[in-house]
Amino acid sequence: MTSEHIVKSYDVELGKLTSTVARMGGQAEQQLRNALEALAGRDEDLAAGVIAADDEADALDQQVADQTVRVLALRAPVADDLRTVLTALKVSAELERVADLAKNIAKRSLVLNQSPIVQSVRATARMGHLVLDRIRRVLDAYLARDADAALEVWRDDEEVDDLYSSLFREILTYMMEDPRTITPCTHLMFVAKNIERCGDHATNIAEMTHFLAKGAMLRQERPKHDTSTT
Amino acid sequence: MTSEHIVKSYDVELGKLTSTVARMGGQAEQQLRNALEALAGRDEDLAAGVIAADDEADALDQQVADQTVRVLALRAPVADDLRTVLTALKVSAELERVADLAKNIAKRSLVLNQSPIVQSVRATARMGHLVLDRIRRVLDAYLARDADAALEVWRDDEEVDDLYSSLFREILTYMMEDPRTITPCTHLMFVAKNIERCGDHATNIAEMTHFLAKGAMLRQERPKHDTSTT
Image (cartoon, each protein chain N blue to C red):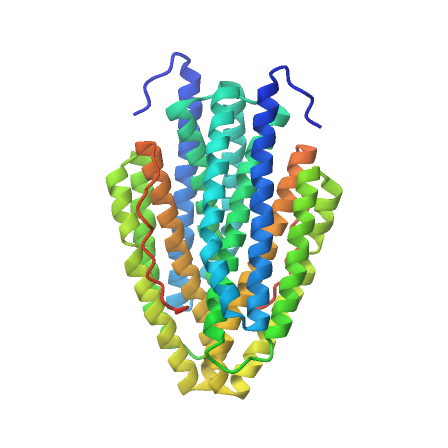
């Protein structure tokens, strides 16, 4: 969409910013994938790796912040370019949170390994892979500025919320049936909640992508099917 | 700190942006206060009011976004002014999340009212008031661009994290002692987690305020005392 600028280095800077966000996206995706694998496979080394790699996400986030300030201060972008810069800033904040949630999942998977395996772990990991797929698709949509693809991801949030609500009830039932599972089940609940929140971040990125591509906010009410608090 | 500009309306716009963020801050604080009161007093009307008022936070957040784009596009601020604008954008995102967490606390307080009162509710509300105090102080620091006051709030995060960790263990113990309390205790755990996250947002705003006032990041490692996942 962005027409070429007379000052070539300007395009280079905008491109650099977007590719830093793309790297953050790839990294966040990888962190969540590894955290889910560590959870399902009770893989302590992998979990430790996710925890250790979180610094990279913070460093990339800082890089986006620096590049944003640079472009804004030196180039004073307007219209489409300004939208590009501000969206990069917002998307990177969402991705930083996804990476942070992945780290928390990895930490809790280590706690879960101290108890016998809880039944719902597999269902939780499955929900995680659904969210992972949404993150992958929304990043593709963002980088391609594809509002339709973003809208599709945005609509899928219901499915994750429904899954989360039923998982929440399932885990509650296990706790009541066998109080010895209360500690691991509680941590698993937070893992499930973290995954659901990763899904919310995908939804936010979908809204930002829509704004980036169309210049207008998604006006429809966001789908909300998490009924665990009702 | 900001020296006066030749174009008077520019200062007016920057001032407007900051006062919108200040309003958001006041609103987020009020929402959290009401949610805590609804929780401790089992006040369903108050909880419903918090849930209904969340739209205002979203509207103010949108107003900040619009004002930011306007200032950036029309004035192309640099240096201190650019920092002011970008910080306003980031602080408002944190405040929007605090308001969102307050809404979730209100929702869960309604669920908690369906069971006999759980012992740890009072300790949870106390932790909430500690966080509320941190939010109030960090907003004052932000509006006064007071790096020292911000640093003080930033350091206080340990206290909340320690409280959260011990509360987490206390609630777990109640669940094990009396499995009939599992459902309300689980919701209370999420309430406690939400409060702890509000505290994290106060910490983030403290870091942003430091950046705003000093132009440099807080280099020290952030204090982290939540040991519920260890």
